[in-house]
Length: 202
Image (cartoon, rainbow, N blue to C red; front, side, top):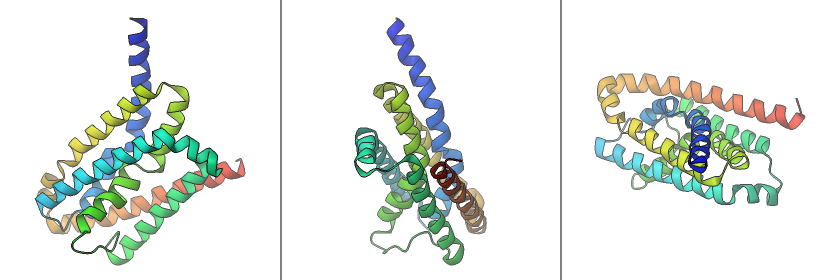
């Protein structure tokens, strides 16, 4: 019984920070802006690919992330700066061109589902950093379950993207995508700032 209670406690303590880091509600505007020109069936396929990419990336990071960081001499602050720069470039590109990425027609859905949706938007530096910290504090199994549960909740929310898209229509989606890009740029700057301050020891 004590072991079960301890497991449930670790599950709850790891679930909440991962939930905050994934921020599925905050990511939804980006999902809409990236899939605004897709048909409903294509949008659903893209969401499925994005979540599978996020799951694979997160599980891979849990398995080898810490070892790779130690091997390459990479710190969490370095990771924040690199991820922030990537998101900032994507945000600026979208504000200037109306597109996050330039995709080939045949590979558009696959590319958008993997990058930037699967990573770094769903599972990016914030989630990976959180996972890295949690596996230092708790057992791997509850952290792993918490991660999978959070992705499941995000998938359920993103599955409603079709309904939201129908409600907003084309004009609303365009406006939402521009606002989302500004927010993404602000998030990117925040990540870079935190990383730089951490490197400087401030």
